[in-house]
Image 1 (spheres, rainbow, N blue to C red):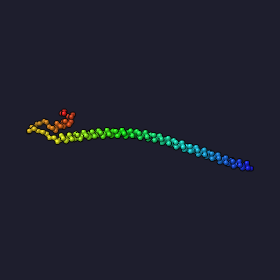
Image 2: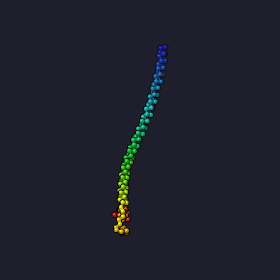
Image 3: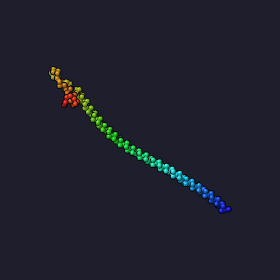
Amino acid sequence: MIGFLSFRILKYLFIGALFFAIGFKSAWYIQGLKIEKVKLEVKKLEEALKQCEMANESNLKTISALKLELVKANKLCSARAKVYRQTIKRLQEIDALEPKSEGGNETDSSDPILLELNRLFTSGAYGK
């Protein structure tokens, strides 16, 4: 009877150990799946990060090219503004001139305003 009793106890202990082992193995397998899922997510995020870094490098190149273009445009605009100011100054000087007429000669063709205007525009009818 003692052998039978110990067999019953051992049977329940064996069944308990078997369920414990199955539960442990199942938990181990589930945790492994979770770890694999996290590893895949990490890999996906690293790839996204690499793409962002490449996009940032491309954007930095574009920004530097645009800065250079802006500097060139500013230089061009400054040069054009300088020419504009010089032209305005020259036109004001020409505007301040008055026609000369020598002692009653009203048919004088040497008009300084016309002469200066012709000098201002070099491609005009009269050369320098």
